[in-house]
Image (cartoon, rainbow, N blue to C red):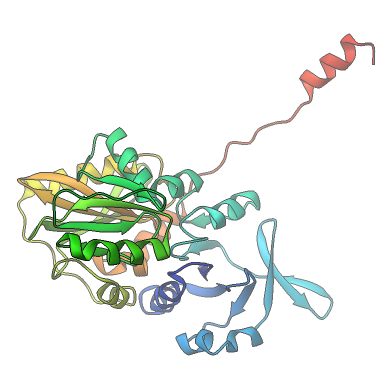
Length: 344
């Protein structure tokens, strides 16, 4: 199988996407075709045997073939016209903007390109933490109490400590723990540097966190192991950045079967039919045996490959059962009736 990995994009997580994409060389056995989306929204074909992070930081990637997205494929200039890029499926590995906000999903769907990743509606409810809260509630999944503010609001906090999060960013970018009033304004300045909207949650010291990845294959859920990530107060950007290049297997969380089932049930409710075609990771909190959704990772770092016993098998199996849009036949029957009634 030939998998075209699309990565990069206009996002604060652009560099993380590069690291994730390169990590796929170590975990996927299939033939990989790398397609880089740069800050100008130009696509480039990056040969698999030369891809390194330095290629992008130096701008050397621009020496490679530029690609054009068209119906069913990507193409590049050839001696006689143009040549299509040969692949079976696209893996959307563009973290943050463009990849997780629905821009690329729209392009792929519009151009009839088969792809692994969240569809437009899934992007809508997972790329914005404020909308994620409402979506989880509608799916009967608990969330930690929160308050929502935008840049023009007078942010008042009554009880500390709290955690402040930009609504549209991942990888803990712009996230701060605020322990008192004196720390509040600086944390707000940091968060609003990255986003126009924030959510504020109570910070619960020592809260238990568990990660579970999975997807739906032939209408059956395929789950990864449940991991309890090692952390201090929370996983900051630097710790998460290292995880995006992670390929070594994670340790199974030491929890009983009842809690495992609760976490899996919450994941299934979140995944629903909304995330079909994507391999996602959900991060959960557990307080007094109650499972709360923390966030949905619609395109997790390194695709959370380290949580699966056979990641290659899961991904290739998912490829065989991606959602297909229902064809709508345009007959112009209604227009023709109008014309006929008018004698035209």
